[in-house]
Image (cartoon, rainbow, N blue to C red):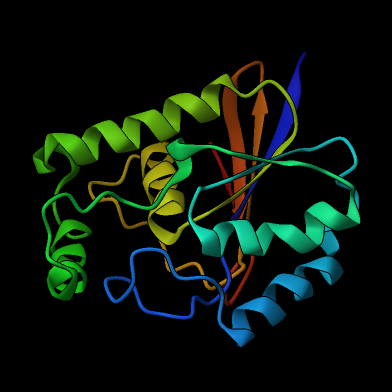
Length: 187
């Protein structure tokens, strides 16, 4: 029986809000949050993990302290980039996102469905323990598929929150989310 763990970490606090800057780095608080991950009890034995990051600077910067601690290279993977907002003006992105997260998944624009499906398919193809530094909506898109809810929004992961998935024989077995409380969902 093959069994792997996948850890998803939302990036630390960005220097700018979504829609204000195309690719902000971490704020001072976000940098501190990324270093706090070094003390996280679930992240103490990552020697056999493969490290992946979204290409966005805030995700890459969040990965750096853990990658350095475990002497790992971080593979940049466009699959785990934030939700695409094609043709949306920067000052309208937040409003657009609020509508998208409430939209039934069957009614989402095709480019959002494709983005979501790429994430799910990429995760299913992983064949070793992996840690992925990514974004609020990437995590939500994945968990919304695993739980079969009608919208993309599953929960509100805080900055540098940790979600752990376990797969057995290429099938999702369970996941654990962190936030105000730790919740395990068996699939």
